[in-house]
Amino acid sequence: MTEGHLENSKETVLIEGKGEKNRKKEIKQKQKSRADRVLFVMSLLLLFLELAKQYGILMMEGRGQYNVWYFPFQLCSMPIYLGILNYRFPSPALRTFIRDFGFMGGVASLIVHRGLIHPGYPLLTLHGFVWHILLAGIAIYLTHAQACEESRGIFRKEAGIFFLAAFLAEGINVLLHPYGDCDMFYISPYHNSTQIVFCDLERITGRPLGILLYLLTVLFGAFLVHEGFRKILLTTKI
Image 1 (cartoon, rainbow, N blue to C red):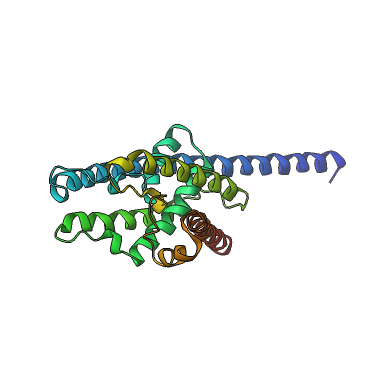
Image 2 (cartoon, one colour; image 1 turned 30 degrees about the vertical axis):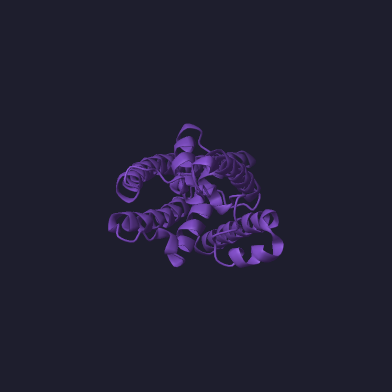
């Protein structure tokens, strides 16, 4: 084979390699775009379910009087807002946040489910279980669709989103306090934690330090979920 043929062969290999790389990149981009659309639809479904719940809370359980305890800005409510925001401004950090914190919150709430029970109102109770099952399902879908970023660096952005949301939640707690016990993210400054373990811990630490410890624990739980999904993907290479 002449030197010219060798050069032509090398160029052909390089071109084919670049073409394959571009095809893979295009396929991955299409997967993410499809995942964004699915996530948007799921966010709208969650919004519909939340509106139905709010109506039930107001008209059935509250008999026309609204209980601000159920204001829709808990951690497990975030996929509504972030999923819609992600559709307008696609972001790996938003998708990964929805997956990591949604899966953690969904599974944790199903395990410790006393907050999902509405005695005498089976539809509201059913709503709570369906909601958190959907959160876990969305997380699994986003992982399978490879729509999330698996680097450890992305978790710093997730942490920023989390603390911003917690700051807004505390603002809502303060603003709505005159109208009742509002406890978004379970960090109301007006009483000790209602969460198991932390309610006992805060008798020692006090509320401000208890809130910080609670937020850091939630953050660490989401980090463990992130690492778990990352290792699963590295192992299975789905």
